Length: 131
Image (cartoon, rainbow, N blue to C red; front, side, top):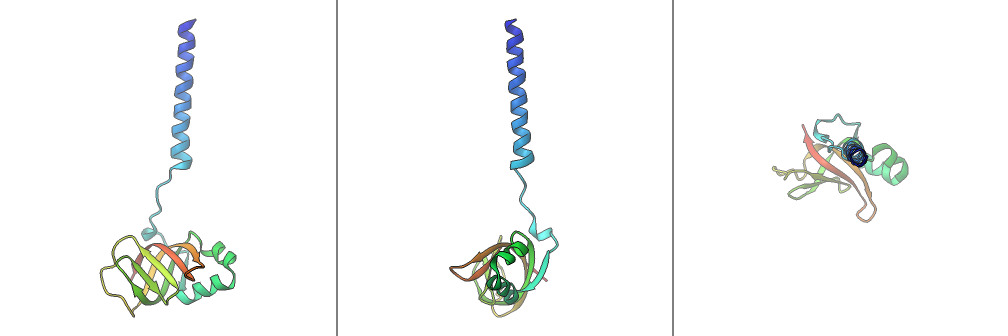
């Protein structure tokens, strides 16, 4: 009788452990999106993107937030891994930007992470330059 209780306890622990592993990998743990390989949901200019956020931030979030978008604009500022388009769109790259892009018109693809009211900029993450 004692062996039967131990076997049931071990079986219950295994079921709970397997259930926990399934829950973690099935629901909690998800691989990061590969924005570079995704097709953009929107192609938009940097000024139009800011206009949309200034007109109605909730509607703009519903359209653009966490979506892959391609933004066209002129580079007004750049650092090692950041490019700012038209003084309105902050683009954070996963790698250093190699070439000098200042005053050039470029297309950037990335994931929109929202509007920063303090700096009055739309933030784009995981950016790549499209040719």
